[in-house]
Length: 403
Ligand code: SF4
Ligand code: SF4
Image (cartoon, rainbow, N blue to C red; front, side):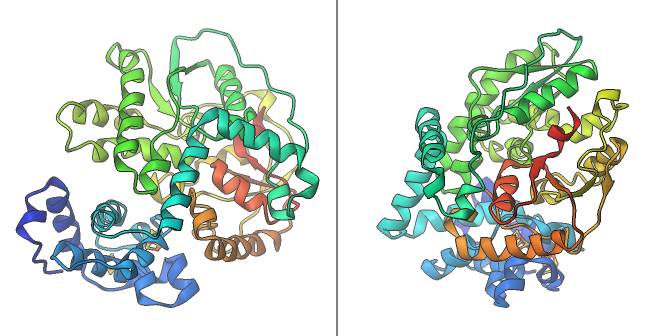
């Protein structure tokens, strides 16, 4: 694709990156075939090719309006288009650049701005979020069915965090919302790793990976979270004390993978950020290298469907690992149609774009439920809760099935 990016945009690191990415696109439109939003609306501007054109126009100096922002907002950032593109167009990076430029040049309505601000504050302020969960538990009988399914009737007994020391160590990012909603996921991961001879370190200063702020236009706030994480991990990294940095939420994992890109323009942090991204791994990549302990073999809830989150299969390009682990644990894994498509969760998308998100969830669940699994396994808290809101089949993080 030919480009004529304005000299002001081209003078920036992101402008040059965008130009390189745009030039790889041959506007063939193959990507539209696997884009969930294009499949729902059939509108060219709700597909990757159309969005690429919109971003190109902004980089070339066209003033973006609300119309441009609406079509970029509707993108799930699932990156299915990247997996499909024969020319290797790095859509994820391009849409990040496009969204930033558009947010600098357009004004959201006061209601939209407030909703985004309130969501960020709710998710990123631990005591506020914990209080909201407790309130939801008390008022559970009064909640609509879709929300009720996301809130457990009473908290499950907490798994014991292992206190063994091992030579092999990894850092686990605890994240923002998962510890309050499903504290046993991280504990299950630490227990499984402990049984494999790997010690899981929790660094107290860690909070959000930065993804929530980044996806809601709060770029400075996202960078502050990222830098704070890097600072807290750095002493372990520079002394070669850890072999990997993981998160049990693939949405956080993909954000950590991108730290190098996100801080490429920051002279103080770019090298550290690149080192952190290099160490970032999905939990399944570590477990798949090991032989499962006998305690992980279990044939209750025998028939399992694994929903691979987009952040795992497209964002991190990790495929087939969880499936092999579940099969090694004695589960019969059922295949289902359209497993490459997004379930509609996509961070805060299920709240900000509820109608599209619910349609995608129901489509996903119809495909899964036609195979009648006993349990649906996944690898991301957002997908887990979103899918659970539409079904009575238990939806669990895969690692919880192994301890
Ligand atoms: S992003 Fe890739 S698949 Fe989509 S139009 Fe461009 S070259 Fe074709
Ligand atoms: S990231 Fe997903 S929703 Fe966005 S354009 Fe690509 S395939 Fe479509």
